[in-house]
Image 1 (cartoon, helix red, strand yellow):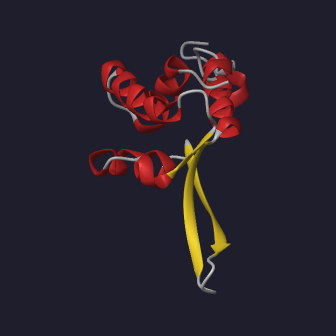
Image 2 (image 1 turned 180 degrees about the vertical axis):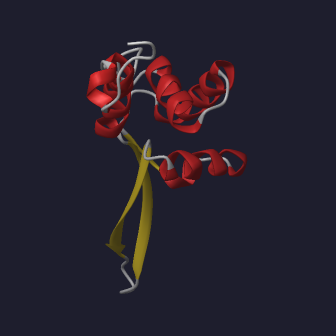
Length: 119
């Protein structure tokens, strides 16, 4: 389940910015989704649309559509947004599992084919 805090951490890690900015953006997005995993595009306010597209570019949201036939024979396309749960979880698990020190810093000098100075 995606929460405001979880989405904020993913936004902060993927897009940068401050924690406060990420939290504000996460609140905006989650105010549309509530407890749903997908929403119809028509409910998004024009001033929030850019945020949704930025988060889609970052892999945190997805879009999809369905085509519905109308009575007069024409087709009507309905657009939706959904939270990308798998990628949000993947982003957070990869970031949280990284050690503080990169692997190359823990290797001895012999691993690099050189000896320590003064040896």
